[in-house]
Image (cartoon, rainbow, N blue to C red; front, side):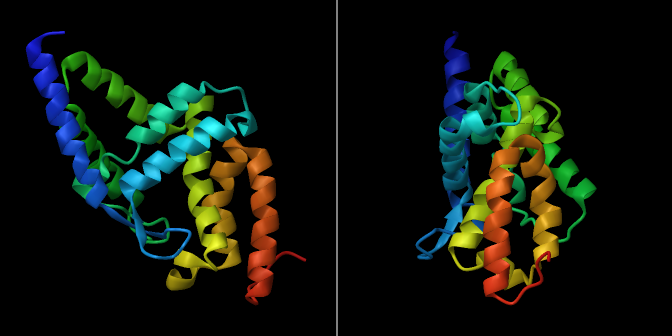
Length: 199
């Protein structure tokens, strides 16, 4: 590689350090503070490594890990948008695409194109790898909410039905065996808190 390529790569690596400062709504499991987006991405990469056998179809765990390490880099420019925020999906998507173009544009051309293609594959969730990555991106915060006594669901007044609608399709599609566990957790969690659950 040319020295110029190395300069661009190091610039990108310095820039993505800013992801550590993007605070998410989800708490850590010990409830000591909110997690940041870099921690979220790292933890999802570990989920992918450990749980790839639970994907709906056979997946390339290495590619899934790469997607998950990249998927929230755009939050450096646009911040974290909680699942329960109710904002415009089209507007958010446009802002994130613009952020991806800027951030990946810091890289040498070939890597820029590879990173953008991988990020878009995750966003579109059409391949088995991307569907599993999307499933984990929903599964991890669901787990956090259940094991912190409601977490962001309590803060946002999220109902059982809303959790099923917002988390269910992605997890069921990419990791149905994980969704079966989620259904058990959710039934117990909302029953204990007096929320409506299926009969």
